[in-house]
Each structure stands twice: as C-alpha cells, then as structure tokens.
Length: 291
Image 1: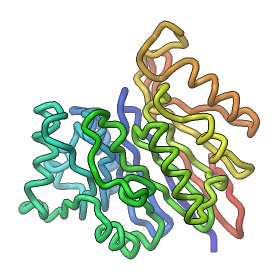
Image 2 (image 1 turned 45 degrees about the vertical axis):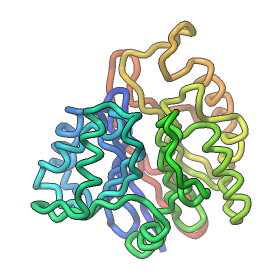
Image 3 (image 1 turned 90 degrees about the vertical axis):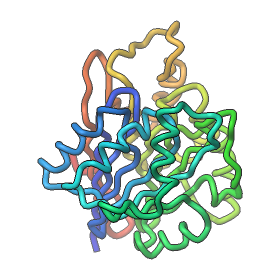
Image 4 (image 1 turned 30 degrees about the vertical axis):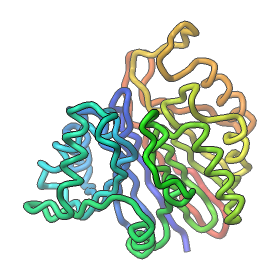
C-alpha cells in the first residue's frame, strides 16, 4: 500500500516551524518559530485546509517556542496535545521561561482542552499508539539522557525520527554534534539503520556545532531525497559571518549531498523567505519525491 507524507518547512526567518502530515492523516507541528511568526503560519495552514493535531517543541529557545501564546490563542486549530522537555529555570530568558511555565503549570489547557506533556518513558510509550509508530524520539530520553543541560540549551533538543516502513525522516531541532554521537551509538545498539534516511532537517541552522561529518555520512544513502536548512533571509556566503548558517558547514554538507544529486534547500536566502513544501510516496520498498 502506498503511503504518503507531506512536509512544509515554513520560512519564519531564523527559527523552525515545520508541518508534517503522516500517512494516517495525523498532522503535527514541530516548533512554532519566533514570537509573531506563528500567526502567519496558522493563517496559511487554515487557508490551505490544514490543521494541527499535535505539537512538538524541540527546546526552549525563542526561535523555536516563541509562538506558543499565538498557538494557544488560535481556537480554529484543533490541537489535541503538546510535547516538550522543560528546562532548568535559571538558564532561560524570562520571556521564554514564562512560555515554558505555561506548559509546565497545566496538564490540560482548561479552555482549549490541550494536553501538555513533558517527555518521559511513559509518554514516549503512549506516543507509539497515538502515532501508529510513525513518530519516534531519538533524543533525549531514548539515549539515556534524563538531566537537562544548563550550559547549552541546544543540547536539550528533542530529535524526532518519522519512520515510514524502513525509511527515516529526521528533524534535528538544534541538536549538537555530541547529541548526534549519542544518537548514532543508540541506533547501532538498537539495530536502527539511519542510512535509509530520505529527509533531513539540518540541525541548528547548519552551524558549526552540529552536522558532524560522521553523522552526515551515517544518514546519507542511496534513498536520500531532500535536506532543508531553516535560516533568515539576509544570510550570505560570507566567511566572516559568525552567525549560522556557517559557510564552511554549508560547503561541507553540499559536497556530500552532491554525491546524491542534491543540495541544501534554504527557507531564507538573498533577502527572500520561502516555505519549502515536500511530498514523498513510499510504496513497495521504494521512495518517490513528488515535486
């Protein structure tokens, strides 16, 4: 039976906001972008006849969770649940702490009836039935990491693996190269073959802190189709620019992708913001990218 997955990586500038429609028609959102961006995303979703069933907030930086308030306030979106991993209170900006605490203080949003759950083993186990085993968490809990990193918030990113038959779609948040190494070790232990990855949301906007050569080599194989980097519209190939994306990292990744006839798709470039819309069909052990 042919299975179809749809992805929209919204152009929200320097931030992540990604829509995924699973083969069982469940619709999920990974991060909300920065404050002010989500209202535009919600309008696009509704205008396209889409909705959001579940939301994953990868970590507590404002370019990933900034739209929480707009998400709660939009009653047209019939959200059932939100998954997150809460930070230590001393290492996050007051505005973002307030947003995270809005999730921590309620198990159910009273007016909207949205279940807000922090990831742990029990929650992840329940997720398997909710998402028909399509959604898997590669980090943190499943790698044996249970303590929040107070030094580097990016190192707390939830890494999501959408598994359709034997094919992987990886959503890295801002995970670091150290996180990637733990993921590879755990996948090897569990017999998970990331070489059958077909989609990769590049970690931390293609900064130097992520996408190690070892990790990239481990996920690129003959079935690979598309890679996306979320970034602001004003970045250029300037080697003196210290903000991500890193020119060196971009060149390094693109060199590897070109071996598979691909290159990075950017949500922002040359003063232009764009939504990256992708669709894949999986049938009989093969994958087709649908332009």
